[in-house]
Image (cartoon, rainbow, N blue to C red):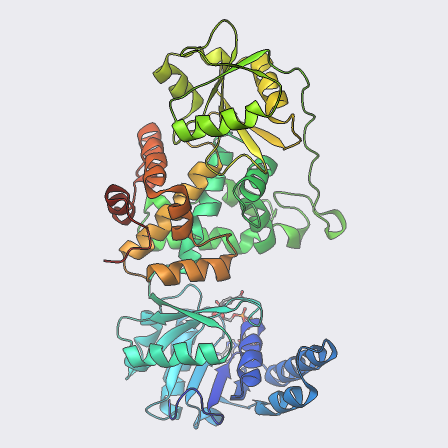
Length: 507
Ligand SMILES: NC(=O)c1ccc[n+]([C@@H]2O[C@H](COP(=O)([O-])OP(=O)(O)OC[C@H]3O[C@@H](n4cnc5c(N)ncnc54)[C@H](O)[C@@H]3O)[C@@H](O)[C@H]2O)c1
């Protein structure tokens, strides 16, 4: 690019004036850049310019932009009839149809038009930046510049290094992103880049829990939202995005990693996609949307019969302490014996283990055993887990006991890692693998996921909060139980857990 990213006269060409092109044009013009918008469809670029100017006008009405700034930004944004009108651009961002050959043809055409130091960028979300750049005489000047929808609100952009991209190309895009008010994160050209790669754990592990009949859709979503603090559970998110988008992305990333079981999608979404249960957009998905409003079933009623006595397994010290602290505030008698007496309710607090295994390992009567997940605290929602033989009478007593202070309780079937433990462990493990493969730095992974996916914390910070050794224990428990390499821990996690250091530690 001629001049630095701070120059007011920087001219940016944007090819493709659809959802993304128009969004990028908006933030670029608002940041003081001259923007030329080109689209192959007759009149599309002009309509996009009008639309962006109308958005500026709405921002003025809401006092979020001054009238002068809106006028100036609107003037800086112009439609251009053809790619040949971008000859003086210092940067061209492509946001056309997601098709490798069509994109390659456009870049060939662009390279013949622009100056030798013009940077070329693609907003592709799923194609290889390296493959698109492979048709260029100067592939070193091309990089991915991956924005998210809606561009003005999603304040993060991935700057993607193709195999032949020069460092300075990405550096200039990073500067420009900051000037446009976005946080740039840098990632290597790899399946799903950074954010879509890091987002695999929530959906695929949620589906695995569903497939196995451990819990239903609503329960899994409630646990992930209220128990683990996510803004949305996996199924609400599938419904929002639409399975016509999410299922192909799951398959594509899985196949691009040569069927690595960590990313294995589910037949559940394939069937639902075939049935047209796309989500909000089709009025029916994992939830129903009559008149566009999500219908959520009521919580089941809470039983009333409290247990006479409860015994708490001391095996997992921290979990036992949390349960004892909680129950001491109520009016249940705690059996403090080393072994449970008589017919008391037995509570275990396993990490990466199911209730059946915990009961057998500790020599407890599984009929009276209930597990409670203490990994995310007991304040907002409590997850109880039962073995196949836990008697309904004891399940009801445990429900009554743990809901007696008004905190909602979910009951799930036996699972090594309840629901939240295993879903979060998968999210942390995948983030560790992104760091291990040097796709992005630990800091960028956490920044990207917080901004791009809206998780309560970056996945590496999340792993640190739980404790890397405990995340490792959950994964080892899952791996042992299922014999599935899906759960194999990333080397990044294993070493940091062994050494007792933060998952953000670089080497
Ligand atoms: N929509 C999203 O959520 C999203 C998010 C991130 C990245 N992306 C990526 O951004 C790109 C654009 O996506 P979109 O959602 O804006 O698509 P869109 O369909 O809304 O817009 C694409 C535009 O490109 C134009 N076009 C197609 N071929 C062209 C060509 N050869 N030359 C000039 N114009 C051409 C079309 O007329 C259309 O106006 C895709 O690569 C997509 O994968 C999309």
